[in-house]
Amino acid sequence: MTEKELSDLVGYSYPAALPIEGRPGWLRCDWVVRTSRDIDEATCATLGSAVTNNVRGALLESGVSAAALDRAAPVIVVAVLDVRHAIVRTEFMAPGTGLNLGDAPMAATWSALQQVDAELEIDELEGLPWRLWKPLVWARDGRAK
Image 1: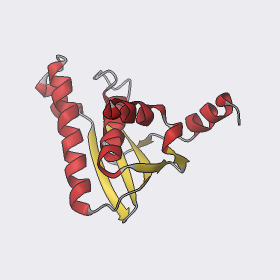
Image 2 (image 1 turned 120 degrees about the vertical axis):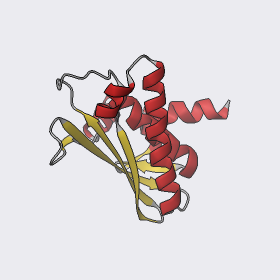
Image 3 (image 1 turned 180 degrees about the horizontal axis):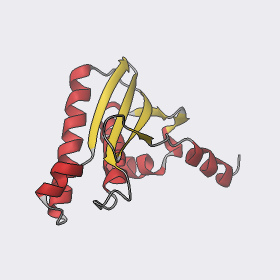
């Protein structure tokens, strides 16, 4: 495959952002991850809350008010499917809902995926090898230095 074809394949593999029932204006993306290392519930619970807190802290530092964050900060949950598979769920306020948190949903998603990769080493994301996902490659390259 050409680099363009691979890039298109990765682009089409992003999970859909779906509305969250009972939470008007909120969306959810679920990423399927296969890891190289065994995973457990405790690790995943810790990762989800750590990423959620990191994103909230970064948004506070960037000038977003605590009140705005209480209404709309992204939430990350990492759920175990089995010893080598997890779902990385990002919940965030949809664009156009009157509260702009900029790139928070994207930053929350990739921060979560990069932290799962650092902890558990992702083999595949959405069924594609980790090496095709540039934000994972960049994060690994940064850790190697």
